[in-house]
Amino acid sequence: MTQRNQSLDLLRGVAVLLVVASHCASEATGAVPGLTALAMDYGQLGVQLFFIVSGYTMMLTFGDRIDSAAVRSFYIRRVFRIVPLFWIAIIFYLLFTRGEGFRTWAPHGISAGDVLLTFLFLHWDSVTAFNSVVPGGWSIAVEMQFYLLFPLLIQLFRRSNGPLLVYGLIALTSVIGQFAADHYFIPRLAQSLRSGEAQLAEGFYYCWLPRQAICFGFGILLYDLVELKNTPRLGALLLVGASLFTAWGAQVALLFALAYAILATSAKLSMIGLLGRHSYAIYLAHFAVVATIATLFPLGFVPLFVLVSAASLALSYWLIEPLIERRFNRLGHGLASQLGPPKAVVTTA
Image 1 (cartoon, rainbow, N blue to C red):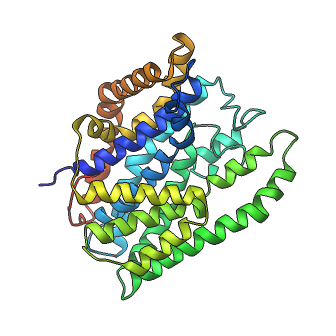
Image 2 (image 1 turned 30 degrees about the vertical axis):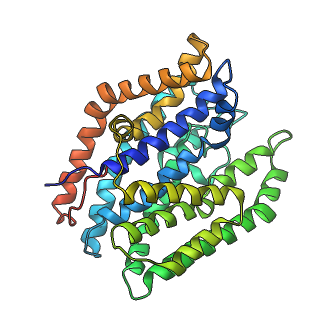
């Protein structure tokens, strides 16, 4: 029998609250001195905390085997966990925006090609699609890219000296990717965009896998420390050193420290854990909830944050999770179990 890891639920709850707070701060009619600015400046780091947790849980749930059946099982479970709700979100937000998409990221509207790329999880490859069809959808594209790489990484990780190679590879990718983006890719893309749209180039390369890979690396390091009880000092030094090249990376390193403290102490908070169990649905739905409530009832930051969090949780608890997520998760796990289930350690999805 498996049981949920309540510390992971706590981390997911913190992550989704950070993201919700950042978007409420930008839509609120009044600011709370210090708190609103804090939410706007650092709330988006909730996505990076999600990535850290994702790296940890992938290591935790992949299983003992590394063969074709284990890989198929991994992908089946991930596809049924992520894809159905995301596809529903595409349809919903097309209706919500009347087919125009989110103009912040697509100033001239979206095309059928943008929708198709998003449907295929290839929107990471288009500056007009990466975050315009489903708000926040860029992070799902990053997750899907890492899923494709993960079986190779875990196979390398389980070899002699494999962990050090994995940490080194991720650290090197992060540093080179950031340097290439800042000094080559962003300026070239900005020059190719229309006047007044240069900021899209920076956003686009903020949302690409080479920059975000350091977060998954820290998640794998968490697994090494917490589950395997190892002390990979050199690997940790490589990841931390790579993260310190930028202020953003230093913030990600602090998120890793927070995650380690919570997992190492098995900390839990029931209410935030409940939000964590519904975090995927809340993440996808809260953009619409924020926009709707802010339009109908202009509110200050704190009441807007509380109302959006409660409404998003209620939407997931009573509608999305029982009618959509639960059914597809069970179907995915059932199909995966026919291939020979991985060693069950904990229920995390």
